[in-house]
Structures are given as structure tokens and as C-alpha cells.
Length: 433
Image (cartoon, rainbow, N blue to C red; front, side):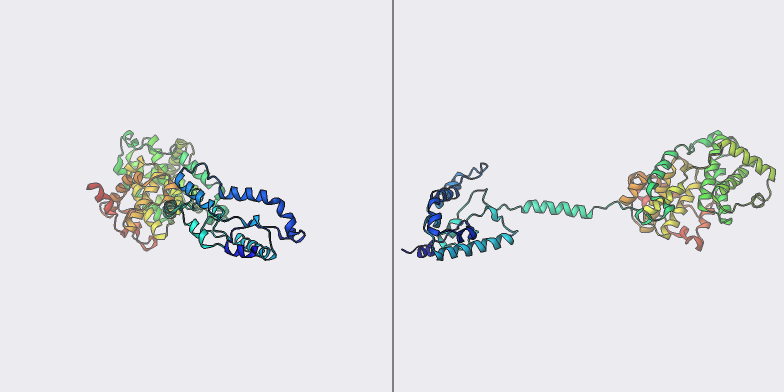
């Protein structure tokens, strides 16, 4: 029987042969001595033991039976020219499949399916169960779990880099701005004031202090001074009153001189002493002003550089990505806190964060505190909630009573009518419920 006819009836997978070597050899001479080695290779392929982790003995026995029924390998027979051409076409087809691998299946483990010429008998054999090591594993559950994790990562709020936009601005000191604010946080405890210092004063009380600060807010607005000046004025006043007893009739003088010192530290154009005397209706003389200035500086040991809530407000507003409306409302609430004596128990950084959080709740009508704000302020929403409710109570009564200087200031177009915003009553109502 012609070998080519037998190959047509029983085509099987042939190990690719180097055609360059075949071209320089005689077909019947070189192949015949290697029949024993090829038969051992064929036996190893057909009767290969599965991976040691496979324990399905029934599947293995079925596979051996199928492999035993396979026809003899064509490599055991003489090779004709027609069969050599078939080998060459098979090799070319396998090379093309190697260049374009199919990502949907694991071809390296498919022994019989890679053959381009396969008859019906071998197709039936591949339909039988195969060992676990030869099966294609399906990772659908793992893909679903991975998809869920990826979706969680997508919707998780990231912490934004708020300094990237100022990388080329030398005044923003991006390279060490974190060190600057770390130093502020460290020094705010040293420059703070005890919330019970008024108990040491015999002639003044908390209400008098509130009247003084409310009046200083109006003076600051009339002179059109910088925001930093007001915050430093209040800080100097409190630190001095915490260390020095003051008579009631001298309390206004302390506030005027504190503003004069703050202007010398913060302003470019400083109000002269005569302007301060005029604004106080000439209740004091020039000599008294200079004497009080010397007393305050000696008492505070010329320590004027302190972290006030203002420096933290600027940083935290940047983290909140604020617009003009949120900024004005935040400063309105912050200045309401300056008037109130009970807010001295809060650190400047904490009070600034609480004011911005309350302003966001006031504008948007719901609680909002982003991961970026929490990371830069180091305060969570739960920590700020109690102070925020207190600020809302200040907002509710800002237009009532005698101390309305802050409300009148922020009821003008220059400050965006921030005082006319409705308070975040839902924060206080939640506490009452």
C-alpha cells in the first residue's frame, strides 16, 4: 500500500522537521536509524503521566485507553515526497499559529487540538474528559472579585496635590510649605491663650472683651486694613490680658495699641497715633498710647510672630478648592468666633477648619468634608462637628443684640453679602433630635 494513501486516512500531528537539513539528506537513510527514538518519544507523548497534583484516576485511565487506540505515528514509516510536502505545510501552519497566539485559550497544554489536519476519530477523543492539568481553567469568579476591587478604587476619593499649580511660584514655597505648617502647628500651642484667663481679671469680664473685639472689627474695616492685622490684634489683646491685670477704663486703650502693633507688623502703610486717638474720640493722650505700647511689648517679650487662625484659613481654603463666596463666608464665621470668648478653648488650626466646614455646610445644604481637607487639616468631620454647631449658633444670632459689627461688615457688597446667607440649621437640629 502506498504510504501517501495511508497518510490521507490517518493524518496525525507530526513534530516539525528542519527543512534545511532535509534538503541535504537522503530521505530513506537518515530517518531509518532514528525510528527507535521516535517510537519512545511517541510513547512518552501518548502515555505521559499527568502532573502530580491530579488525583482523578478515572479520567486518567480513560485518557490512556484513548491514547492506546491511536494509529501508529507516521514517523515510523518511510517518508515520500508527497508526505514531505505535507510536513512542510504543517510546519508553516504551526509557525503561523505561533506568531499569532490565541489569548482565549492555553494552547501550550493542548496536544491534539493544535494539529491542522485532524480526523473524526481524534475529535471524538478530545471530547472525553482530560486531566485537570490539561484543562483550561476558568477564572470568572476571580475576575469578578478583581472587577469589584477596581471599581472601589475608582470611586475612592483621592487626596489632591494642592501645591502642584504653584510649583513655579517662588512665593508659594512649595518645596517646604509642609514644613512651614508643621512648625505652625507646633507653635500654636505655645502662643495660645487659656480659656479661663478672664477669671484673673478683677475689673473686666467676658462681655467687655466681646464689646472691645466687636468695636475693633469696625475700626479695622474703616481703616481698610489687611485680614492678618485683625487676627493678630485679637491675639495680642488676649495674650496681654492673660498676663496683665487691666482696669476697665484702660481696656479700650489696650485694644487700640494692640492694633497699632499689629499694623506695624503686617501693614505697609501704618495708621499714625493721631488717627487712633481720633477714632477713640480722644479718650486717651499720645503719651498714654506710647506707654501702653511699651508695656505690651515688654509683657509679651516682643513675641509678635504667632500662628493665628488666618494662616490656617488660607491653607485650608486652598485644600477645599474654595471660590470667592466660600472664602467670604468662611471669614465671616471666623470673625464671629473672634468676638466670642468661649472659642479660645479651640486651637487656631482647629477653629479655622471648623469655620470652613461650617461654611461648606451652609452653602451646599449638606455635610461636606473631603479627603483632601481632612488630610491637610488632620481633623475629621466627627471632630469638627461639635465646634461647627457652636459656630452655627453664632451665625443665628449675628444680626441680633448689640454686637453686630461683624454682621454689618459682611452685609456689604464688598464682602459679597456673606452675612445674609441662611445658617446651617440642620446641624443644630440634628443635635437637638
